[in-house]
Length: 130
Image (cartoon, rainbow, N blue to C red; front, side, top):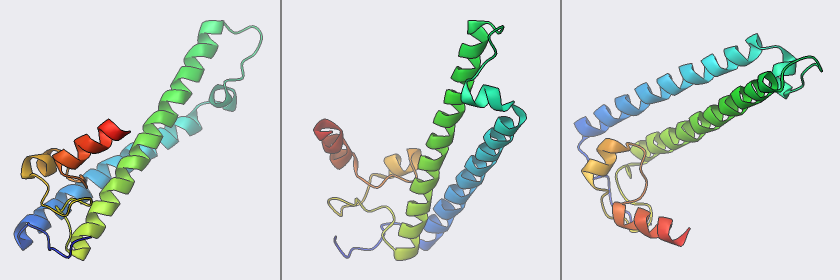
């Protein structure tokens, strides 16, 4: 990996760190809300087990809700990990540099995805390969 330093000024990095930390706090609150919601539901709803006299639609709804919560929880975990990685990159002075080619990531891309690790060209190449 190139030994280039972040293309951002100290002020910009401070602003990006705050933005990332704020986004991480929002995600943490969402994760806590999902967890609290899961605890409020009876265990039968969490496992999808239903009594024989319940409607199939009720069982399907409970299962759908649980799967939705799991999906949201996994998305939150994934975004939190990306944010943590971006914060580490700020600490190491490599924030804003493409992890593949080492060139600066486009500022518009960083503005849209502050945890981006690849420039647009390398991200597109990754998506075509995958």
